[in-house]
Structures are given as C-alpha cells and as structure tokens.
Length: 447
Ligand SMILES: *[C@@H]1O[C@H](CO)[C@@H](O)[C@H](O)[C@H]1NC(C)=O
Ligand SMILES: *[C@@H]1O[C@H](CO)[C@@H](O)[C@H](O)[C@H]1NC(C)=O
Image (cartoon, rainbow, N blue to C red):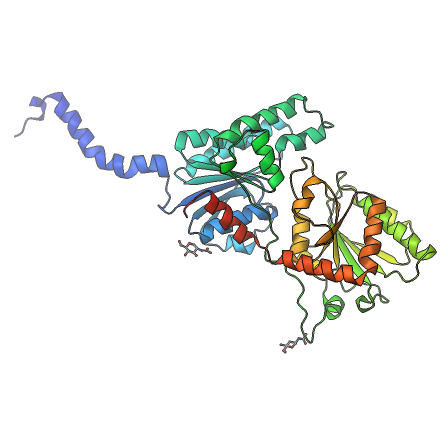
C-alpha cells in the first residue's frame, strides 16, 4: 500500500492547491469580481430618489437598455414604476429601503450601508451612473468604487448640491454644511470619467470653477418623454370636442367659454413652494381682469389650470376665492401622471414660474409643455435662453406687470399665437434619444 506519510509535506500542500485551482478560477475569482451576473455589458444607475419621479434617470435606463446593456437601476420605489421600466427585460430594478428616521447622521449612515452593499452585489459592471444632487454620501462612495474596481463613473449633473443647500441658509456659502457639500462636489467630481450636464451654462461652470476637462463633459438636454405629444386634430374630432369629452377637463371649462372665438386656456404646474411664486400669476390675472373691466371689453376669456399640490396650496385657493372673477377662471387640479399630458395638449399656453437656485438648470415643466406643442410664457433667468427663445417659442417676463403684458399680447394677437405655436411644434419634435446618442458618441462609449 502507498504510504502518504512518506511523502514530503510540500507535495501534499501542492496537491491541495492544485485540486482547488478550478474552484478558485471558476468560482471564487469571478464571484469576487463579477458577482452572479452575466457577461453582458452592464451599467449601474443609482438614484437617491423616487424612480418614477426621475424621468431623466428612467430615460438613461431605457437608452442603455436599447443599446443591449444590462441595466441595474437602483432607487426608491415609492410609487408604481412606469411600464416602460418594469416591463423592460434588460432593466432590473433594485428598490432601496427608505429610512424615515429623523436626523441627518443616521440617515446618511443608513444610506451609506445600503449603497455599499448594493455596489458590492453589483460589482463587475462596466459603468456606474449617478445623478447629482444629492452628492452626499453617494459621490465620494462611487469615486472610491471607481478607484478600487475600475468601473467607469458617469456623473449626470442636474444641479449643484451646494447651491441648493446654500438656499436653505440664506445663500451663506460659508455655512459649514454648505462648505462641506461644496468640497465634496469639487473634490470627488474629478474621479468621474464622464460628465453630463443639463445646460451649456452648467458645463461652462464645471470647466471654469471645478476645473474639469471639457472633453469629458457633454451637454445632454432634457426632453419630454413620449407621453407628451401635441394634440392631433382629426376631421371628426377637434380640440373643442376633446375639451367637451376629456374627463380631466370637461367639468372645468365654463359654459360660455369658446376657443373658436379666441378664448384661451393656460396651464401651469407647481409644488406650491416659496421659490415658485404662484402669486405672480394670480396677480397678473387680476390685472387682466382689471384691464377687461376698465379698458377693453374685447379681451378673450382665460381658463387657467394650476396643477400640483404643496404646502401653500390652501392659501392660494383662498386668495383666488376671495376675488371676483369675470373674465378669468382659475382651476386648481391634482392630476395623475397619465392625466397630466392629456390636459397639457389641450391648452394654448404653458406658464412657468420656476427660477433656478444655481441659475444653471432648466425647468422640466417647460420641456413637457414643449413636448405637448405649447408655447410657454416663462419667468426669465439667465440660462433660460438655452431653451426659450423670445417671440419664437415663447415669451419671457420678470414680474407681475410683464406677465400681464405678455398675457395681453399672447391672448389678443392671432399672429403671435400662430407663430409661437409653430415654434413650440418644432420643439415637440426634438426628443431625448437623439440627444443621448450624440452625447455618448462624443464620449466614444461603444455600446
Ligand atoms: C434588450 O437587449 C437585447 C439584447 O440583449 C436587445 O436586442 C433588446 O432590444 C433590448 N430590449 C430593449 C427593450 O431595448
Ligand atoms: C373618427 O373617424 C374614424 C374613421 O375615419 C373613426 O375610426 C373614429 O372612431 C372616429 N372618431 C370619433 C370620435 O367619432
């Protein structure tokens, strides 16, 4: 019989190592670097927000999926996911748990653990894409992840986290939290391989202030998703017919209101927060009433829809009820994500009162309005020029009086209406996918 004990010890060890090699090569190492995933190209998209309320993130997911990527979409699932996401076989949604705990330290530590666990589980991906803001704690984490694993990092800049935070502290840049937030964005953004921005102004800012390489930055303009489409008039179904039958509007149009005589419907959506002053719109409509009473009985009627909900809503409803309206009717609505596009396409003008904390981002609501073929009358701020062109696809104002003047102009002048409408239709033809392809081919990312 063969005597094992007679062999030198090293032979035994070598034998053990040799026998365990397949285990190491075929199981342990792949598991360490790739987890349990397929070998398809993969992208992790991580959003610290509700997925169904992050249209841009959903668009990224769909775009990657259409390029044959396996998409790992991580985010909060607070409401039903859009079908285009839940039914896409290439997209796996990873719901992240929410913590209702008050206190920033506990919340951030909890997020830290969730993110770390998820990134580990999804290791071996080709890209990781995050949106900014929020940048804490995710930006430093993915930056370190990029260094450790080589997974290429893409940051999608919607805005600057520190400037939003600064608003909370009366614009004080030297508040410790604002300063920390600034430093985090400044330091960790340079670990990213590619940057996307929502405006040219944001790109210029990143190049000038954060000293990022402009070759790695691409402007990717937002666009309305395909739910938002202009109203299509057919022979037997006019806009007037639609207004009389569409459930979300039919009960709110006054009986003597006639779009064929030039009466106009305007719409705005808002979350009734202090940074978006609906009072400006209500004030302008009051002046419009006054102009009607005192100067011009030929002014068209206006129906104004204000959709959304938020902290100051009751206050505004009360303000509107206290006033006697003859030419204008104001309707407050709260619509589902399916109904809102149906309302938009039946209106004549969209109103935007949004202004930006950083002055570097564009309001999504204007894009939805353009997608629906509506010209917009928008509160002006510097970067808005990248989207709204005065007298081409909209009108701009800076206060109540100017909004009133724009309204007069938009309501009375048929030529203006026709030419703005045409401008808005052209906008409605621009969609997300062409922009996305352009940005990613600039980066030379090969799908
Ligand atoms: C999913 O990926 C496959 C290839 O793996 C591709 O053919 C298909 O078009 C993708 N699906 C969607 C909805 O884009
Ligand atoms: C309009 O006509 C088309 C056919 O020409 C028909 O299919 C459709 O149901 C009609 N719509 C209405 C609202 O009558």
